[in-house]
Image 1 (cartoon, rainbow, N blue to C red):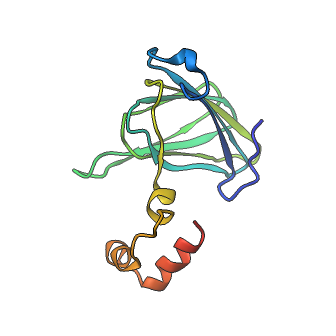
Image 2 (cartoon, rainbow, N blue to C red):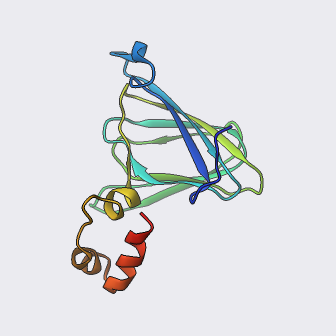
Image 3 (tube, rainbow, N blue to C red):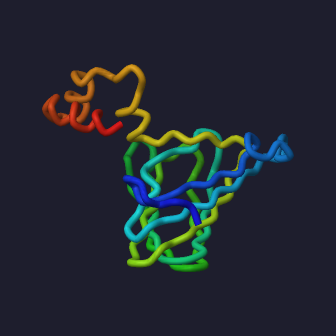
Length: 152
């Protein structure tokens, strides 16, 4: 089991071409995700892969958001043995909705799917994106942005 004692309560262990060179040209990689009670795999995207997730243990709330055309949220509660697909490039997430630990295995349709964790990418950039830009984009005070950026 991965160490889930972190701010988001999950641990992602990937096996891709960077970890296993034998995957080169095979177009596949896998991930194990361990979730503490109520932990989550925060909103992220894979720019080069579709993802299929299988719940091995526990209960998860999963979801993805369609593109900017209509930003429709699709969610589903999953139990042990259930499967869900996240389309390539769409922002998606998972959250353990149980009081015990949960485990999922995912397969991705690329040897190097990439991952962009939304909060880390926008609030943890180096150098920081200007709080003026975020204040207008999120329609909040700059102090709120500064507080969020300080966590990344």
